Image 1 (cartoon, one colour):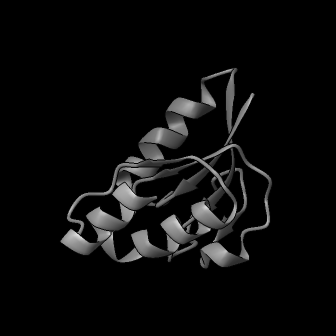
Image 2: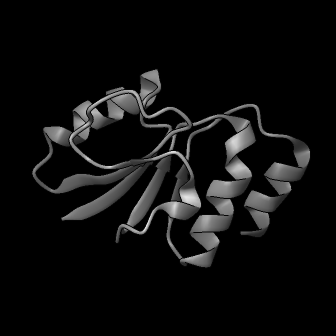
Length: 100
């Protein structure tokens, strides 16, 4: 089973992905990251990605451009694959993603 951290879990697309994964027997969202923890998602939600201590296989990011630096740093530190779906990245962020 693929264990997923869902970054941007409380936004529209985060909720869409959460619903899709819930129906997939081969995947599970084990933690969420969002600046606002205002929903019961059935998994723990961290408002600070660095506080997330849940073991996972991959991060799926549907957050905002301002959060991408922290998500990328978290993924690099833990040598964890990152599916980056956030748009509106700066040229520097795009370079950082290419470098990673």
